[in-house]
Image (cartoon, rainbow, N blue to C red; front, side, top):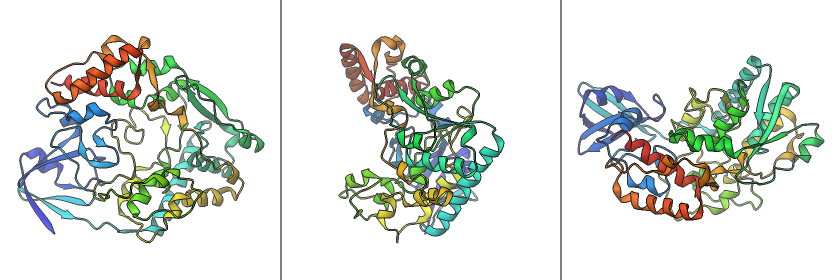
Length: 415
């Protein structure tokens, strides 16, 4: 089935001449549909256009630009502007835009597994071949254990610096690495200091603040390549969103993916926009190589991430996901059962700064000086003002509220 639209300008005609979310501009084209008229703009164009209003919803805790809900890639920060479905293909025919539906289940599951295994190993081998010394972020999660298994397989543990990070806001103890120590592995631990985090609190870019832990790590390990296992849970299929997308509850008791037990099955799943992986063009390192080019994430390969909505999981056992079976098999194929006893639930890398609050005395006055202009829908501003006034009494403010203030001021600067 095809739908015909009239493009409102030349820019739309060019952007949508042959476009799907996963074939080109890294998820950064949004559309606005009014009757049979369609307009398309890139995120860059939307950000700087003062006539395009910003949704008041960003004032209530939306953190993953440009999405209002990071689990559904449709509604965005920009009023009236949405992302197309994963399964829409736009094409230009003379002066019209034709939208055609793509098939969902075009990549057999077993084919995807083989492609992913080969691609990830190729990525890791390329990093190892081009780097004499590497720093690896070891969270003790199953994806960093997979990276460790490749280091063992290719005899590169000896020249890899294994590190684990906490931050001075949480004061939480580090993971106990006695199991790793018994294997002869040395894990160096370090705290990301309050001063290091404050540096990113007091600069104006919300996208840098959103990923301040990553920037702090790169500051700490200057001029070094830093290896991470980011987004393995989506690419390697051990994320609760896969179970939700499959539509079948797990049946085993002991789960590696514990969130599978908390899925709300009363809510339907919009497969057209239901996210499987984080897509944040201005923040995450695989979307933002210019600023985070020293942060290497061989698992979160864009080619693999773009395949995910098309993988046929209809016959998949949900327990396969809940038990992290795909990544377990990859670890076994590399080193046998040598690392099995390391696989356990662990604290988050960097001790989850997003759950923490920051002392007000460390924050420059202008960070929380809200630029009240008409671009951000004013219905959301009272809640921001209320939160900031409350923070002044408590002498601390949450990470989320700082990020919200940064977003509001950032977009209002283009008014």
